[in-house]
Amino acid sequence: MKELFKQYRICAILRNIPSDQLPDYGEALYQGGIRLFEVALNSESAREQIHMLRRKFGDRAWVGAGTVTTKERCLMAREAGAQFFLTPSVSKYTLEFCRENHILLLPGVMTPSDVASCLEYGYHVLKLFPAGAFPFTYIKNLKGPFDHTEYVAVGGVSLQNVGKYLEAGYIGAGIGNNLVPAEYIRDRQWEKVEKHIKNLYQF
Figure 1 (cartoon, one colour):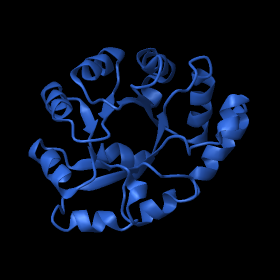
Figure 2 (cartoon, helix red, strand yellow):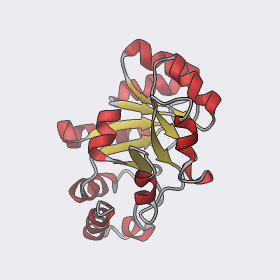
Figure 3 (cartoon, one colour):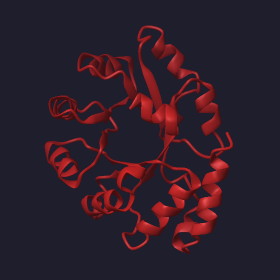
Figure 4 (cartoon, helix red, strand yellow):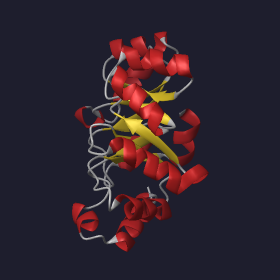
């Protein structure tokens, strides 16, 4: 996960995107520069959408499953072909499942105790969620006692502030509803989506 986020920086979080719009939306994001995609498993047709993106991109991009918090969702994400998992919190079942099955995982943390729990399972690259609830420098406090950890900011990250998170020391960020204006998707304005994402990479 560290190598992926250091190379690509931004993960597009896809939650409740209509399936008939997903191929074109995904392509517009890709053309704009996105190479990491997360399909939230609490979205409608999540399993099918992971399949869809895997078939579409092949080896050109990485497609992960988000909100993987239960045994059922772990099995669903693996069956769908997700290349990595993400959680919003410390889900010990998911930590164990991914370690035993050699699946890339970005576990969600918020507190020092959360970080310590993930380290017990060998996970050093963590998702700080909700990052927007803390000052940009919060990871400095976490890295004090946990100096071998790295963090991806998720929750409250937008085009306007993503640069500040990266400057603060985060190796990457996940952006969902704030990734592009909702009307671009609603009105199928894919060229505007692509241009908007290209601007994102000007940080």
